[in-house]
Length: 305
Image (tube, rainbow, N blue to C red; front, top):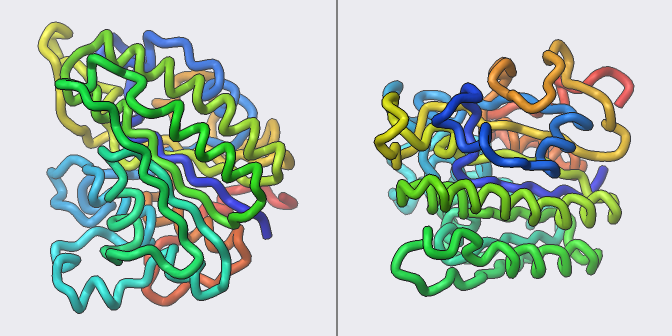
């Protein structure tokens, strides 16, 4: 049983390392270190795998719903009865008497709280929510950093406090700025987020907190159209990375996973976003409730860890 930090890198999908993929053009030493040193896999984040139509790209609502409830997204969530009856990760953690922290800035705050909690409008018992104000600018490509540094500062303080058993943080920069179509700003945002990850991951591991790193849907892996000149501003069908970081997993890989350096495109899709909350419950020593459809990704770890 361990404490768990879920890092949601909003809009970070897996795609070919080509001209359209921002990841191909930015040095990301922190992310690269995690990929090289810990188990990494790909998870489905669009279409039927997350409860959308087969031809529907992923989005933040469905992504966070899956990540928080262990269920595919359904239109009926807007029905009050459905909302009240949905079992979520946050609810299970609360019933167990554990403490949790949800943090993001204005642009994705509702996703890290309301959608993540399965449509539950108020924090659960033992849940603290931190809203960091997004900067007041006419367009976020004017400030690619957005409020990432403030998010990191508050998260690091929480990790060091020892108060919480579970943390979920959403960094919205990549998705929000990719929507502007400003390639240069997305490149800056990716470098900034990687720097923020350096402090967050180091602090978490230093304090014995297991890190799960993923995304809610793809975007930055395709920021231009096929002509490489026209901006592609929308979400994608791409799978997303899933990194499982804790000290005993250094230099280990998921079973049957290929050796990965930086290019994640060879990774097979081994699960879906709804598997993440089930994994978190197992790490916290809590039982998976009947309402969750996912399966723990610890099944992919090598035996003996």
